Image 1 (spheres, rainbow, N blue to C red):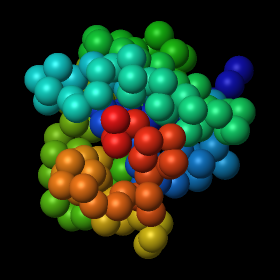
Image 2: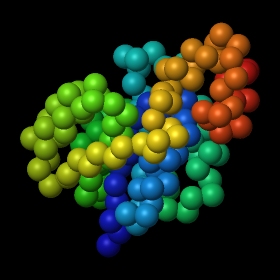
Image 3: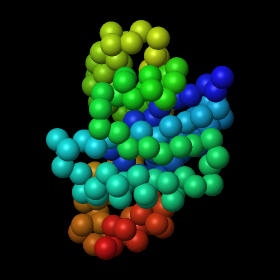
Length: 156
């Protein structure tokens, strides 16, 4: 039986901060599923298909990682994948309130699936997808925040 964790998010786009957390999670779990949410209410910059494609390219060398899109309830997706836990990254204290509420709601929906929080590394703490998109839209250099494949996609 594989020990599986789900790392959900919009990954619009996937950043070096996401990759940092994913790679560190592979040291703790047999299988890390990067679950890319359709999140139509957020009006993502990239389509779900493109976000999945970019994440697969960025994470291709990590054998314990699988990338999948989903458009249903996270807890249902986690159960379908046989996950024992959901992974959430916390960049700042401000993230905690919202994440704490989500974790509580998910626990109510299925008490067998735990939520684990991981702090980003010092080097990636300030990176957020929304800031990366904004910098790219204004013509700034985002190459230190995202994989070269993502830089290329943002330039298009």
